[in-house]
Image (cartoon, rainbow, N blue to C red; front, side):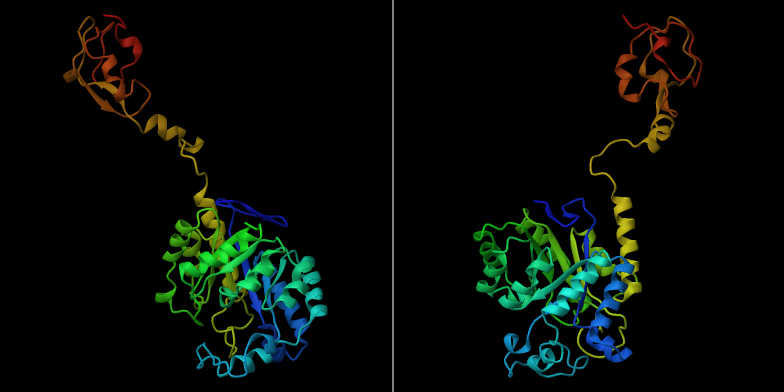
Length: 362
């Protein structure tokens, strides 16, 4: 795996996973609930994500008329989000322009989190280019080769989401990025279904992506409902996901869009605690005895012990010895050094046999 570096972060096999709180456009509903300005609500969500331990916050930058036809049908659970047209839904949440994103980027820096926003057209990518250190390519654009090429030419890391994709489509998208001289790619497992049923999460696909693209880090973009222990995300990390992205809200009970399958600050804190614990128990990657194991290494192992009294001058035979703790004498794997040797002195029953107990030469 090639390490990917940006800002103060490094994504590699040993790094703590890079955690993205996907605010998306949820701040519009938070603003409506709190009866304040959407920009203020977005900042409130950035601060909450930063306080809960996120490494990055991510928004979505689009204009509805550039993204979807007026006749585009819904592909989400309409019992949760009742809007029947993609255009109609996206139009509700596309009022921000360059000035607002610049302000959100500035505020994110102040909160010490990375500002990100997924662009959905080339103009959006150009606006965002100087505001963020990497680009996220939506699953919906996995076959949008001209757009992927436009992003790849900016020579920034590309987080490529693979929801609803075949491996040949992923291959083509990666090839497109590589052809622009950009090999800073993270392949993101994703199920493009809102919400994703637990049985459909298929986290085993993370292992498949790692096998298919060993040179690139693999991540996970999640759309399942947050479980009580954040076990879905934690399992993804255990399977090797080096980037974790999940929608973020301040109120999971809000109707519509991306609140019902989003994590809230408490969920995020719980997941971060899981990450800290995983990192602690994972520890070193090279097997060796630890300092804390030294007493056990000495006292819990076995030594060669006299099974009965062995008089001085006796040739020691195998039936005269056994193996018992502690391991302060000759190890059982050194039995060949003692069999057939003459006892230099009397050896007591149950005595641990040392090298000075027998003649070294025959």
